[in-house]
Length: 289
Image (cartoon, rainbow, N blue to C red):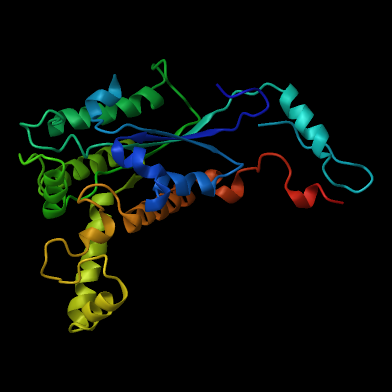
């Protein structure tokens, strides 16, 4: 529990392992980038749980005192005032990012049928937006995020390395779930980040650039970045830049999601844009005379 005087409003990122891993700094995790963007402004709370499906997921301070001599904020006074004042933080934004596990094969334990998945997402939204709900929150904004694409060969290789040989996912499975999220967003007038479509579009751009350059792009990639596949005919091409194992986000994938999230916030909820959220405690230029 956050102590009185230290309470800041909250963003909650809710989802599965792609959200949990969003704090991986070595992958430029999208949640860590979000927390950095709102440092001293909003507390970003990561509630991503590996292996989660939609079924499992169901169950302001006083004004600054000013020093009359120099017009600067009395830092010690504000700290003391802050600790004395009790304030309950408000949840301002919730991202719901589920479906990657739901869209596994029906024979797999994590699978959730498409219709049930859609109903689960709608129920989560109703928890927060329905005035009859005990969880109703008139202040909260919601952003939905669709599951990303899947690269079969990368995922199969990863699963083989840890001893799983039974196929339980396919690149054909995520799109209907992404489409369902897009439909729900439209029905509720809630913004949606279509991660499936966005990453697919980025990969197509890479393929087009490679084809239009008559091999020069491939040669350039080979010379400058040995980490990623440069053969445009290889099924892993492009996907390995956005998905580290065919499913979870690589650095570019995290960057893309973070930038999409900030664009969505700035466009739909400008009051939550970083420049419009007050900074917690005075900055140095308000302390030093």
